[in-house]
Image (cartoon, chains in turn cyan, yellow):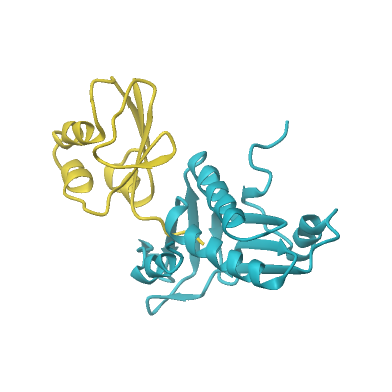
Length: 156
Length: 82
């Protein structure tokens, strides 16, 4: 069965940037630019060390929200292809969390679209992070005002 | 029936992942008022919570959104992915 959103992947497994971009570019001869963003787990947040990061999502809604953001990027800029991979589960510092890759004929559109997708993902896609500190204490990560401001710079 | 889901901090605070209730509420707000009659932590987490996020059938909604039988209603804190 064809997946409903072939360019959205929510997965536990890690991803390989090189092979993902090769797949994205496959069949296109008019692509002149590929921009990718990879988000990774930092070992520190709010001034404290983080030893484990857990990510949960809302199955069904998250895929739909990501596809909406992806399509919005395709409406705003002339893009040839794009892909969003977001991992869920339990992670350690330096693990990969998210990949956004955008291919276009010219670089400017791919740069803008990648930035836009990440800013919108941060404030619109239902994912939640929970941190475990070295002593075993856990805390849910708070949303940031700066992320909301980052989204607002794209307001039309 | 309506299907209610709770996520992240809210799920832990309420000690509940999901539940099904009879479809007797006209709006999300009516449902919240009803849930708040359970006392704490329900009232504080759902009604006295200005950052509460609401989705109805996978779309972002508000307290004024109308609900009906068969709807999936989710409550969660502001999102923190990426």
